[in-house]
Image 1 (spheres, one colour):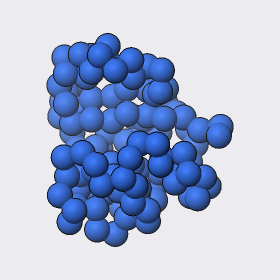
Image 2: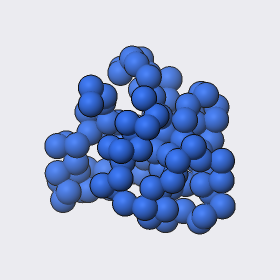
Image 3: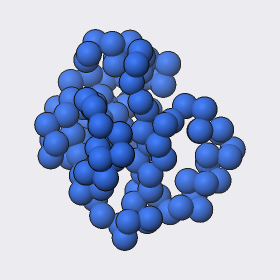
Length: 112
């Protein structure tokens, strides 16, 4: 679809590396960022680094309020994930809701 997928997590570097190996995340994501590497800023604060590294248009996708807040702070559409760890109220205000990762391509196409 001509877009980059970037993973931004509030996790520790060791956790991200373990999951990258276990799930071969490098096959799916063009960039992998964890807040530990930058001194634990909010996702919204770290987004400026990602935008510098990967210029273009963005949508935030996630299951937590921190993902929604990143979208609001930067004027991005927010795709809420009904799967994951977040509570339903964390997805309030999402432009789209998805129930599985397989729904993401269709959701992205609707936002383009």
